Length: 207
Image 1 (tube, rainbow, N blue to C red):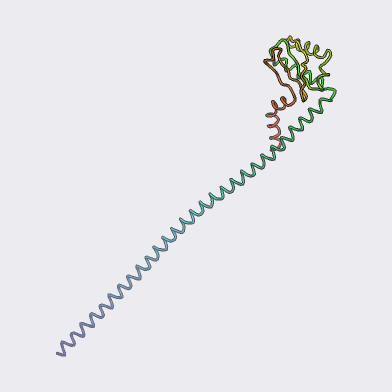
Image 2 (image 1 turned 180 degrees about the vertical axis):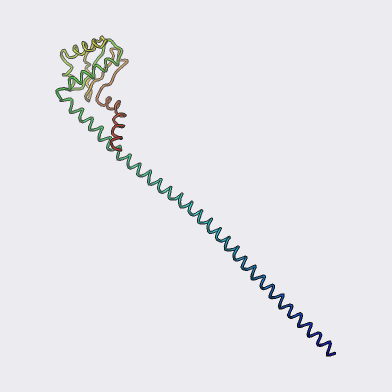
C-alpha cells in the first residue's frame, strides 16, 4: 500500500514537472510569437505611415502647384493689365502727337503723301477727297492739281475734287466717284492699321 502511494506521488510529481516544462515551452513560444508579431506589426505600421506620408506629400505638392499656378496667373493678369494701360497711354500719345503735327509747317507734305496712298489704293479715274477741318485749306487752290501731276508720274491718271463732307479728325478719306469704294487714311484708321506693329514694338520694350 505504501509502495503504491509512493508510486502515485512519483507519477504526480513527474506529471507536474512535465506540465511545468510544457507550460514554459508554450510561454516561450508565445513570447517568440509576440516578438515576431510586434516586428511584423511595426513593419506594417511603418509601411502604412510611409504610404500616408507619400500621399500627403503628393497632395501637398498638388496644393502647392495650384497655389503657385494661381499666383502666377494673378501676376500675369496684373502684368497684362499694366501693359495694356501703358499701351493705351502710348497710343493716346501717338494720337496727340499726330494732332499737334496738323499745325506743323511740314504737315502739308505729309497730307499729300496720305492722299497719294489713297489714289494708289483706289482703282478710279475720279476721286473725291474728304478732308478734316484743318486739312481743307491745305488741299485748296492748286494743291489737288499738284497731287494729280505727282500721281501721273506714278502711272495713275486721276481727277481729284474736294468733298463737301468734313472729317472730325486729321487725315483724309478718299472715295471713288461712284461711291462704291473708299480708302480711309484718317489718323484713327492709320493708327488701327499700324496698331499691331506698334503693340509688338511697345511690348518688346516693356518686356
